[in-house]
Amino acid sequence: MSPPPEPARPSPRVDCAVDGAVATLSLVNPARLNAMTAAMWAAIPAHVRSAEADPAVRLLVVRGEGRRAFSAGADISEFEKSRTGDAARHYNDLNHAAFAALKGASKPTLAMIHGPCLGGGLAIAACCDLRIADDTAAFAIPAARLGIGYDPRWVRPLLEILPPPRVKDILFTARRIPAAEALAMGLVDRVVATASLEATVAEIARSIAANAPLTLRAAKAAVDALTRHPESADLARLDRLVSDCFASADYAEGCRAFLEKRQPQFEGR
Figure 1 (cartoon, rainbow, N blue to C red):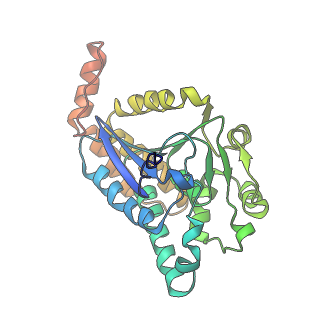
Figure 2: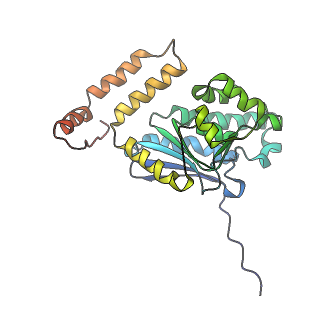
């Protein structure tokens, strides 16, 4: 009797599923610890735009498929063809577009990190507003061990969450940083047991989704602008976003709910 056929492996891809107010973007390449192919990088901006355009979505969670890894980074098996000459410039453009989409999202973004979070995977996580990891998570950027020039545009998200000496440590040593050290250095915001990770992220997502979307948008815009451009932030734009909050139906609803001692029902308008 011939052995049963092996189950088909899922093709590398990026999925996006919406459940209520939460859009979950999943990096799917489990055979390679969710390493990112060129096609996967190319798919991220469209998914982010879709979540941004959906009025029901209040935040975006980014995760790796399964529980083995968040992402082992770029798929090295593609490097000989995709990271030389003109192909390398095209590949970098795909990376830039993916990171810019995540960094530019007006809605909150949260990375849920199981296991290895390496190279481009760490860059994806760094582009999110919050990073919640389990105690098996490990972080590294191994570019120095591969002879890869690490694009300065990909350093910027790290510098927004870590001081320069910490970023240099990550880039110079290419070492793996365990979850506890990542928490101590500020690379992640919380570390929980593996069994608790999904429930913890779901609770944080519910907490964020219950709040006023216009307030979240204004707060995120202010933090991002004042962090990235402390001396030249567009304060007029930030003031308009705050004014939009006070002019909204959600502001009236929030005040009524407070006086009536009930939970507000915000609609983002």
